[in-house]
Image (cartoon, rainbow, N blue to C red; front, side, top):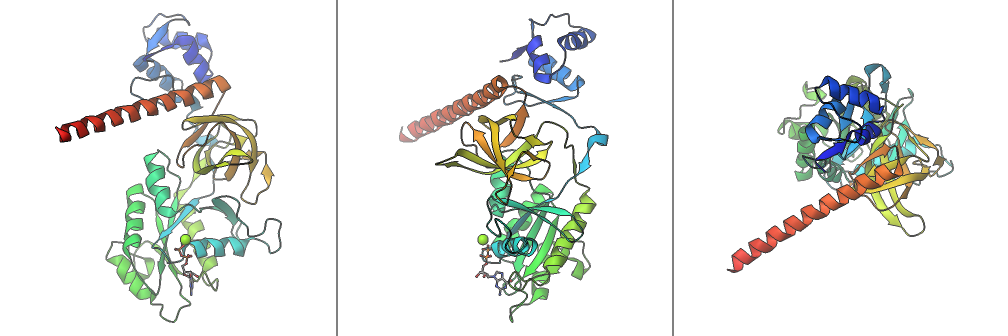
Amino acid sequence: PEAIMVGELANRMAERVADVVKALMQNGMMVTQNQTIDADTAELIVEEFGHRIVRVSDSDVEQVITTSEDKPEDMKPRAPVITIMGHVDHGKTSLLDAIRNAKVVAGEAGGITQHIGAYQVETEAGQKLTFLDTPGHAAFTSMRSRGAQVTDIVVLVVAADDSVMPQTVEAINHAKAAGVPMIVAINKIDKPAADPDKVRAGLLQHEVIVEKMSGEVQDVEVSAHTGQGLDELLESIALQAEILELKANPDRNAEGAVIEAQLDVGRGPVATVLVQKGTLHQGDIFVVGEQWGKVRAMENDRGERVKIAGPSVPVEVLGLNGTPEAGDVLNVVETEAQAREIAEYRAQAAKDKRAAAGAATTLEQLMQKA
Ligand code: GDP
Ligand code: MG
């Protein structure tokens, strides 16, 4: 598909055909709605209309997803999305649990049972924070490789009795590569062997200069076990979020990222989606990676049914035709035909790519044998 019909392009952008024809005319092209234009021209027109083009391959314009760029006045503050990273056993899971438990009213329905791989809490000051419970490193490597950038802030957990370890360094590198600000949580401060200054000195060796060492990276001493420092950590996150001035337009077709997905025996394919732009509604038609679907039902992080989910809100989505991959991007589109077409196109493109890669290895193997 190196060309697209003018009428179809207008349809994809949800613009009037007459307006598209007029725009083409102004660019020196006399065409009717049933004529086709090449990919480059289509892209030019798409941009003129303030839409974004999603190309799966260089020549492909079938992948126009009708999302206009957001106007500055439509941007509203959104909650920061936080990933906790650090060396194994330094207390990532414990810290995530401690934060959630501290913020969930005891005895509340659903209680401390987490339903999905992400949750939202509210600080004393009323600031909402979204925590991702994905293994931090996977959130960076696999998700970024699939085009999703989900994290705004990294909380780097370092055990005060163990200091900087190989995966600590890995986490620092991930955060730096992604350009995501870090906050250091020096955990297990309750332990007699805790030596927080050793942690700070260790971090310095990797060019992470914390505030206590006159640097700019916030550092907080915490204990996931006693709860010490947790409020301070949340305040630090809120402060960092304020500096980032995170915003999204809630009044547009939703775009989000798959945090995790699986095939549920009773419910079919289920995906936890972090909404990043717009608002996802029950009944919305969407394409997600090579899959598509229609939102049949949504559940929030407490297992409650919800009908809408705005920016930075994680929800479990039912109604997929297949199981997407973590890191796949979800886009709401106008019609089922459009969703199916894009999903099928992507699936075919991926299949072709795999076939080509397979052929290459076979050839390589043959060469080696020869
Ligand atoms: P993860 O591998 O980073 O997710 O680490 P975990 O949360 O599984 O914790 C590893 C071990 O450290 C567990 O035995 C925890 O109980 C313990 N632990 C975690 N946080 C603390 C803490 O603040 N104080 C103490 N004393 N132990 C902790
Ligand atoms: Mg863990």
